[in-house]
Length: 233
Image (tube, rainbow, N blue to C red):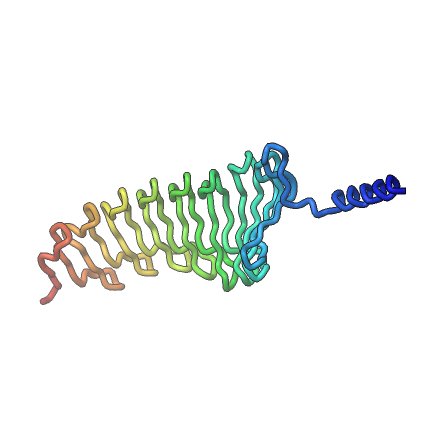
């Protein structure tokens, strides 16, 4: 009788073990395996996703404290690469791009919380801005175009009116404005023309009115205004 009772208890215990929640499990080598869910001290879910041999694989979901979806990441290359899409609390897309070794890489896009339109598009290498960067008006038209090299502005710099006409044209070099600088009226006529050297205004800067007539000249030396010339005065 005792043997039968013990056998029944063993069967019940075995069944309960098999039926337990199998999340957050590790193998005999201490590696995470299968489905994992992490919560904070208040019991709010932080993320959930799958592991294989200790590495995250496939889709991982991250959450705000109120339970709303914050980020969806698709993991690969033993967790080194993640294609991520992040969301504002209102559910609109916030940003999308790729992480390599937990650092932004390649092209990233950022969106408006109010209307969901594209706000900017940036290129990264190992977490540092490097390459073309675009900024957009709320309505969607291109507002500004510039380039980065290892985190510093370097290369052509342009701004546009909402109708696509050129508004400003200049150049950066290693983070400083360098060389020719021009701004334009919506008509296409020049507004301001000058030169930069190592971020400082230099030489003669010419200001035009909307008819194309010179209205003022400013002379600079290493960023310091030397004199102002105004026609007719």
